[in-house]
Amino acid sequence: MKVTVKILRYNPEKDKRPRYRTYHVEAEPTDRVLDVLEKIKGYQDGSLSFRRSCAHGICGSCAMRINGMNRLACKTLIKDLHSDKIVIEPLLGLPLMKDLIVDMKPFFEHYQSVKPYLINDEPPPLTERLQSPEERERFDDTTKCILCAACTTSCPSFWSNGQYVGPAAIVNAHRFIFDSRDRGAAERLRILSDQFGVYRCHTIFNCTLACPRDIQITKAIGEVKRAIATGSLD
Ligand code: SF4
Ligand code: F3S
Image 1 (spheres, rainbow, N blue to C red):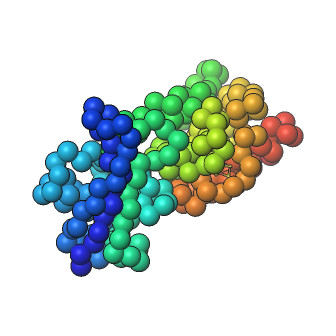
Image 2: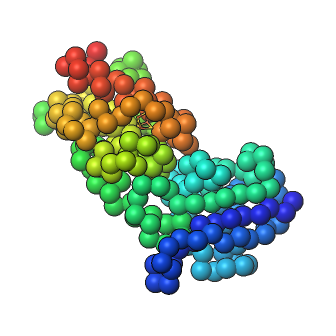
């Protein structure tokens, strides 16, 4: 099939503002959007810039807006778009660097601000820090995050104020707050209760719809809100 691909292009050295360019590409219905981008870059326009790495839905590099929705280009099949017209744009809410590449620095600063690592100063036991399957289940969903930013950059609260820590940071805080081996929950809940924390979330659900890992993000944010409100992790 022939697909028409409209891509928002921007070269900071030449362009005053982003503009669309259209390409016509021969593709299989089972090709991924990433394959189409590679074909354009390889055979039509080598200056096209986008991020990709593993190409298998694990590294989170190729998140972009595809027909108006945040998705991973490597997990999106042409046939699943139900159209031979594809519009590809960079993620919203982060500074645009070039073509489909945005500056991820603010995103990772929010991520780092919630201390996304195990905190436990107690002397280590002789064997592992044990955990029951039930205790592990408590935060299993939020361990699946690949830090692609599709959630945070689809959130209207984040668009309106980039200081909002955003759903991805809350997901990664949740992953440790509810880990029975961790002792940093109180500190993270204090960080997330400030004016740019969880209460900027108005339960809009765009984040949950955008997540390529199907993480129940809005539910996780609700659990963090409840922990702050009740002072309990139960
Ligand atoms: Fe991506 Fe989902 Fe993680 Fe958000 S929670 S960064 S959408 S994997
Ligand atoms: Fe935004 Fe998701 Fe909350 S889209 S408002 S973080 S439910």
